[in-house]
Length: 73
Image (cartoon, rainbow, N blue to C red; front, top):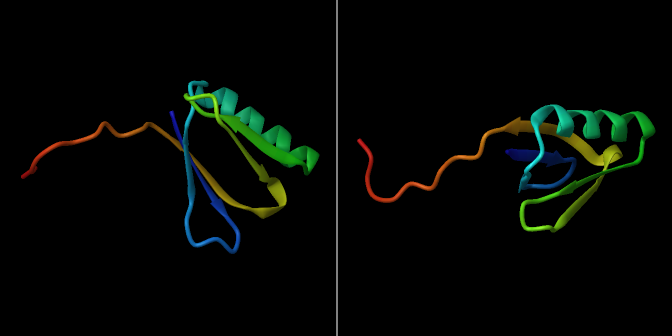
């Protein structure tokens, strides 16, 4: 699943692919916001993304898009 995170005062959003279910990720985000701590997510390659929740602008949960090759009409 693809997670996009907007960070305040940053020009680009952070994008991470995780293996967790949407409900699990949503609960992690809600718990981090309630604790006013940091949001920590682990991607499919084992890397960790840590963002202080005080700097979160938005979080978008969705499905990753498959890579496309060639022209589409």
